Length: 430
Ligand SMILES: *Cc1c(COP(=O)(O)O)cnc(C)c1O
Image (cartoon, rainbow, N blue to C red; front, side, top):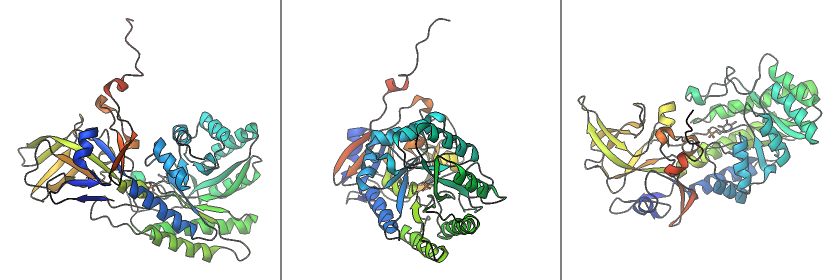
């Protein structure tokens, strides 16, 4: 993250001062540091390209996506995961090549499948037998063969919040590598005339801070692939191990470097590939670890209160509408005050929305002189903030501004009040 404080403790991001950003764009404001995004993409690309055969990162668009980012991803030549027609439309509007798009999701509607097939989406992750049959039938009707990976669940419990854990068998996602379920799906996929099974996928969860669950996941996939090779002679061209690498939201979070994870995976691919076959191409689907640390949300303090218990609240002009993660997952964040430093007073950072649960940071230490009107920068908000934003309380969504080497560029305009009722029909006496 290219942020720093100057001698007056003023915060600068991507060479632009926070003071200038809020002066120009107001608060709340999502800021994205271009250099961080490009660094993470480049590292994933380099690590996977060093595999033999070379692999590819498929950035998970659900973490953060807009036209400009789709254009940047296209410029970099990475792949892109989408989970809806809306994400696909955004990617295409940003000039992204559909051949490097992987269409995910546990319920893809007929309209979305038709749209993806018509646009030439390169790869589909099939999540259920129902979807397998539907995609086969619709690909046949469209006169194309759809390349697929089967989304499998390996039966692995990653140590992360229950809501972002997806590797265990009891989940709505994927086909279990148990009770013959995944085997049945391989049989069905190989028998489907309009589908081309290229491999397997498994994503075990998110904000994972250890290497071990990633290796266990790939080992499960490779073991399954070996079993199917013995049973059917089918060996995958692709293994897609999903996303999930954690990031540093607070100083306590200590994620392993992605290069270490990939190196461990290369070794497993070497070990498990049958002597008469070549190793599958390794795909990864990082979302959070590409964009989270690139993002900062700027707010202005609107009120400071001390309640009878002694707890102090700093309340800002945004909150759960622009960052639902603390309310949804008790996600931790850390904030800095522009122009002020120190760890003198404990306080809760609260939002402006009409919910007691609208808390951005349960407690942290603040400078002694923090005051109404100060600008607070919440760090690490680049993933699952803008994409999960809502208009609760009819508060407009903030703009997204990218910064690079002293320049700021709007990537997404902020909503105005009139945008909030743009789709409303006026009252007609009934
Ligand atoms: C959410 C998701 C990802 C991205 O996860 P991150 O934790 O953001 O890296 C990748 N693949 C699938 C299938 C997902 O559901």
